[in-house]
Image (cartoon, rainbow, N blue to C red):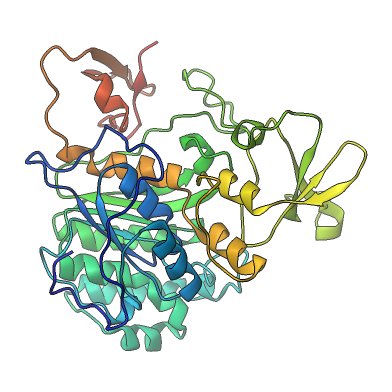
Length: 404
């Protein structure tokens, strides 16, 4: 980050990020060898930052919560500012803008005030679309809620910072907000993709749906390529993808009949409408986990004995290393950091996809593969290297796949 980026007096100095795992060799930065500089808003304990470090990016975070800042410091992730509302960004400050704004008011597990305020949020975006740059206090007045207004801060810094790439993530209820933001960003020269992704389809041992916005100035951008099948879907039967990563595989456990008993109720049905009737969601060890939240789940053995899940369980099911140095003097603070984090394996897949346009051109002699649109049969030839960062999208809008 440049020295003139607005930094509070108490912010720690930038430090080198240690390698928590071997870095990937797919993305190294721009063609001239310079690293991609990422600014991570609402960075939390470092899911996005860990993914960025694995890809060789130079990442700095903005985080207000002290326990998460302490975790970032312990992990070696620089934090350049405390409050995103006080941050001043300018063109050239960073290349990639990452953002996972607070989701409590939008989440189905929260109060729902964000869902009720959706029309007001879209009204705020209209202000940006009209060429205005409303202050945070103005947006709070329009939306009636400080936390809900934070979801528009990424758009503000995309406009003021003019980065090459954007990668934003939130709960599925925020997808209409991302779609409205995409309209504004398109007018600024970005090629944008928005949609919902499922974490288990990208190698995370957990079913976790999120609304994502990806954008680049380099050229048209399609959907990110899943690397695994969905937990339960008949539409993947013709695609040569592995099964989702199971809890047993992620945790190094044998499937001895133990089940995961989630901390929330199972899905409603015609005969099971109340939480008591639905009971708890249960998963076998041979399946991916339910969504990891700030609350612990239980393990239920075949004889009915129940034990509480551990911090290690939560870290591994969120695709963090088991020795990731989460800080906090209480278990609930530690678990909340983990539950709020973006799974780094998912984050890495999204960053690979959006920044792939800045990779050097494929070398001569690289193996070429044929991909086909399952909808209309349209085919193109591409390289195996490019397929690692995402299948192209057909002109009809369908994500293409390898010809079988």
